[in-house]
Figure 1: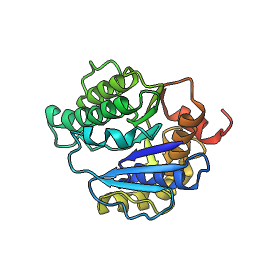
Figure 2: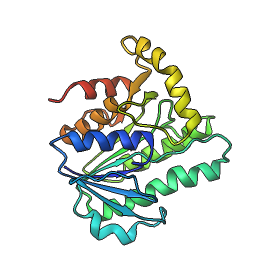
Figure 3: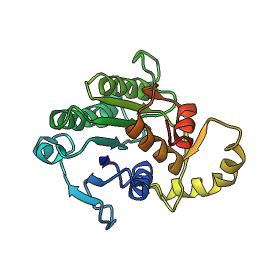
Length: 224
């Protein structure tokens, strides 16, 4: 696989990047960021691109890649629907359309979230917008596409969130995570999520909306 990662400066994207570097199935990794992620590795090429609402200048580069791990996302707290939709839906579709133009035979994996509303009609604003984004990606026409819906994600391997306050909360919750992990489908970690995404991209998976139970299955099974 020649993989693109968007969001590699964030917790989920950084987790995917680290697993891609260790996985023999991933030959090349293209990072598209607004600021450098700070990783020097033979597999990695990084493009600093400022306008995340126009990726058309990158289409010639994107043609060489066959998988996209789209891990960008923001919290909806304090946002009005039009603001959240612009960052969540418009930005995601801006890249997805450019990548589809470059290689419609690619696989697109989108990080969504537990509770997303695929009907787009529910009362919760963020869930509707996420559902709209999922539906647009899944119906775009890629060779394969997935919407991953993780719940709580415990960072591993030194991966950190952008917010120091959030990082403190992760440290405080870590003992609870290890207690819940064997019994709960509501929690996962950054390594398991990344492995699940890579396995889905490589071997495929029947469910295109990947819920927590599916993430567990994909993370554990390298021979699907």
